[in-house]
Image 1 (cartoon, one colour):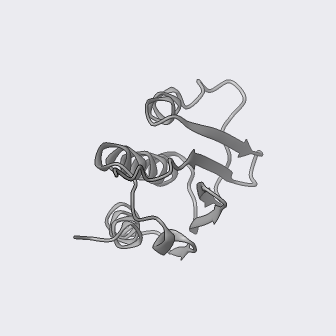
Image 2 (cartoon, rainbow, N blue to C red):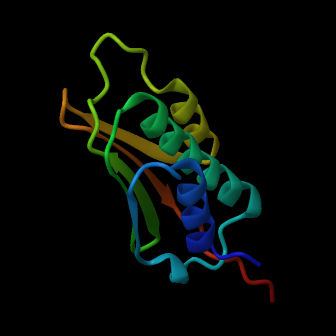
Length: 130
């Protein structure tokens, strides 16, 4: 089976083939029980955020970073592009996917200073049967 960090790296390499990017993936080795459908949506969220950076940001570099804290995993996709204009529609497609996997999405953007999209998921404890 392909690890979560490997899936994230492959998505970044595929989507951002022409843009320099860095993956700093910490804590993912601890995650052994993310439900398959939730893991798929997690990867698809990352791919969509990467696609947005590719198509809209005019970025020269993208950073993909993960970290865990307790039972929470967070991924951040940060670009050094032009930011999201104030009059643009919010990232509804990403918000919808975040809700579907019971995650919290945050967006920080500034004109000519890039955008950071992050998604935080609370991991469920593994249920053990007697």
